[in-house]
Image (cartoon, rainbow, N blue to C red; front, side, top):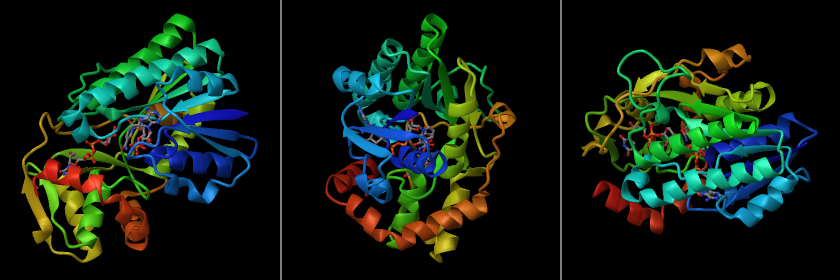
Amino acid sequence: MRILVTGGLGFIGSHFIRHILATKPDVQVVNLDKQTYAGNPDNLKDVEDDARYDYAKGDICDAAIVDKLARDADIIVNFAAESHVDRSIGKPGDFIRTDIFGTYTLLEAARRHKVKRFVQISTDEVYGSREKGSFNENDLLRPSSPYSASKAGADMLAHSYFVTYRLPVVITRSSNNYGPFQYPEKLMPLFITNAIEDKELPLYGDGSNVRDWLYVEDNCRAISLAVEKGMPGEIYNIASGQELSNKGVTRLILKLLGKPDSLIKPVKDRPGHDFRYSLDSAKIRKLGFKPKVSFEEGIKTTVNWYKANRWWWKRLKSGEYLEYYRKQYNL
Ligand code: NAD
Ligand code: TDX
């Protein structure tokens, strides 16, 4: 069995590849990744010599390389995307190209080569914000940012390939992932690494926005279930049910690191900032999914990992990153 994973040098994709190699001895994995600023070979250093793992550097928008790799694939799991909301506000074009056109390129190749399963990694953000209650898979999509709108486009395009061409598409929509190897532009790794260095933590608005926090390995277990047991044409929400305000997460990070709350710096709010994401994940739970990692345990493991692995993030927070950071936060 051969799985083509795209975006496997990124945060969730790299955990997923490690999970598959560890749990499925008969599976060969090919990783297609463009190595954007977020694609980092250090994320998979421990498996790069595994005979069941191959890496191809390339773009999911490049029909030639996609066609070549899809020809031998039984399953495609598409993680590749521009994934950061703030960058999508500054430069939407990259998101429309990779997230929509790239997904289309993969779907076309999957259709041509009759792959047995196409798993599209979508997000809770496609539903938009919700003050009370939770979204289920039949709710309307009302994305707010160029990022979430691009992901919604890809998600609907993937579904259309099931309806029109009977391509066996399965879609997962997960909540906010956190854990080791997350690029330090997202809330959790940015605030942990800044706090370790006694730098300010730029909290948007009043910090009351709410997210559901899912430990990355739990998401990988759920995606693996969707690959194996998901019904073609179906969508699966994946969430932990552990909802916290950004203020709450920030204070906990500072507490775990023994740093003062005075490091919190309220900054201008994100334009179009979604107040709350919340998912009803009963459907994936019916397939047998249950998160194993509580938020208390996951955040401790995560904070300790960034403390112990400065080598991983120190290099990333230099050069181009500093330019992005200064511009983004005006700090
Ligand atoms: P990431 O930014 O860490 O990684 C993205 C990876 O895709 C990188 O390795 C990058 O090099 C690669 N990539 C980007 N453009 C490419 C292209 N054109 N061709 C080939 N490779 C390309 O992202 P992540 O946080 O690991 O997210 C992975 C997927 O999960 C994304 O589709 C994202 O929308 C989705 N998702 C993420 C979260 C989250 O909390 N991080 C939650 C729900 C869904
Ligand atoms: O510096 C910051 N300050 C801040 O207050 C950053 C980077 C974020 N925030 C806030 C914005 C959000 O309310 O923290 C919350 C989390 O922000 P991000 O880490 O940027 O994640 P979010 O916007 O919620 O999107 C994430 O979850 C869904 C991922 O980045 C997406 O790829 C995924 O689809």
